[in-house]
Image (cartoon, rainbow, N blue to C red):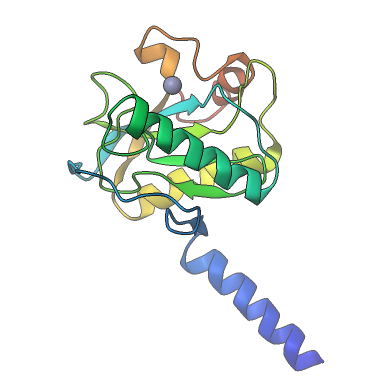
Length: 183
Ligand SMILES: [Zn+2]
């Protein structure tokens, strides 16, 4: 019994030290991109979004929301893939969108110099959960640790770089408290 507990502790903490858990596109049933443009390394910006659609608090429903967004972006808008680099569900999971190193379609004029991280749901109505906030910060720290994002990066809400109410008032008020947010 002690051995199994020790093994569990090793598995738990090894995951924490060596990487983060990201639900891959294939795990949520996403389709491959029809084309890709690549990003430079050491980007200076992270842009926070909300989906402004349905909220989800279970893995199954969050996976469904990722599939719905991807279908909308590809089939109705004619984009190459879901627009965002990553999604964060209120189930506490990080979902891969275009992922690292691939340019998103999330903020006009900012796609080539930023990562787009989207919270699934409408954050004029909902408040981001503590876990969701922790996961977003963990994701950004991971992108910095891998060199995708500069350690001196700036966080903006989408409304700061475009004419939109995204990422919703509750999420915008939250990110304003983050160390790397700038007015
Ligand atoms: Zn947005």
